[in-house]
Amino acid sequence: MTGHNSCAAIYSTSPATEVAIRALRESDFDMHKVSVISKGGLDEKHLVGCYEIAGHFGVFGIQDDFWNQLWSSAPAAVCFHLSESGPLFIAGALVGMLLAVLDMSSGPGDFNPLHAAFDELGMGVDDITRYLAALQSGCLVLLVQGLQSELEQAYDVLKGSQPLDVSIYLTGY
Amino acid sequence: MNTDSPLYRHYKQKLAQSPVFNGLSDGVLCDMLEELHHSTWRKGTEMDALSLAKRFYLIIDGRVKLERVDAVTANRVTIFLLGPGDGFDVISLLDKQPHEATPVALDDLHLLSASTQTVREWINHYPEFNRNFLPYLGQQMRGIEDLAADLALKDTITRLARLILRHTVSGAPPGKRLHPVRLIHDLPHESLAHMIGATRQVVNKHLQALRHKGVLDNVSHHLVVSELESLKEQAESFLSHNHHP
Image (cartoon, rainbow over all chains, first blue to last red; front, top):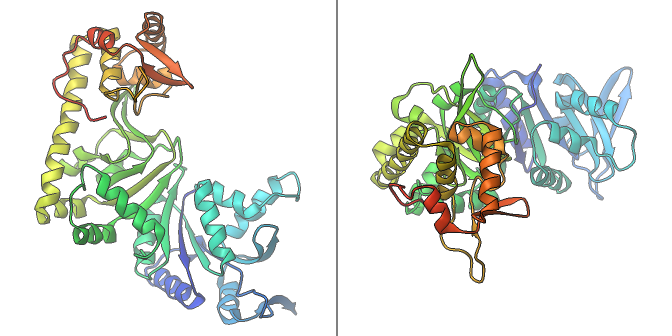
């Protein structure tokens, strides 16, 4: 169980996020606790989509190399369309929490499962707004879940990869 | 951290306002920010006391209490109540030993933290930081001395009056006769009881008595002082030093 604590970093590009992921892997961090969220490069000019052929899931678009690699290595991956954020690709441990949050909700409507999941992970309203705005502007959010000691380790690693922002959120669980 | 981000500028501004980091040069603040982690503790978070030996925390926003809990009786006493600009834990920072005090977030806490090793290096390496830090340590030690003396020598209503007086902002706002109270203004009676070694019922009784006498009042569920001189009389006015608002 990874607990309800998290460390979140914002990156402006998928290559920068790749550097961060590689750095975490090289520091022997448990990659099952890592998630990535982004629009996948979706904007009005480029076609982005996901597909399944013979049981193989893939992404088509300007960040397809990045997402195909992530989707193949992550324990879970999903593509959501949220009313506030639009389409989002999500890979990693966060998917399980999103599905759990959806399971507990009373139904669709104005409910934003990503907002609820971020809240579960200790983020306040202002922080959630900041991350959703970053995603909306095309940035990627890298999320790590775990115990405080693990998050402090991850923070030091992620700081070295020059994120736009990195913070730790603790709920005491 | 991206030095162009609004958050970085916000943290730097808050650091400069803290008594511990006040007056440090821009270059030193930037060097320190490189070593500082930003974290948020949700309200009610009770952290492992052992973590205080590893990292020193500076409060950007919110309040935290450090309390000791008796393992047998579960009775609690609040050793420190800290707000924006304060740092913790100074005891573990000084003697490198784990502290039994448990930090509990009274609000959503925004913190900057560095390893205790790093902060000790700052004390050695930056004389200007040392010049701020020693008086701050002295202030914290006086707080513990006052707590010990009050618990040993004063009755509960005097202890309560002294607690409120220590947290009263000196000088009522223009046009107002009420003196605001900081940090403890909206704490439940049980929390106040933990700060003076009493029970919730006793604190409740004393607060009602002080309100009945017109010494205290309640404005928008916040404790305020109506008659500062009467409060000083009740506290026996024997405070040994000035308190920062």
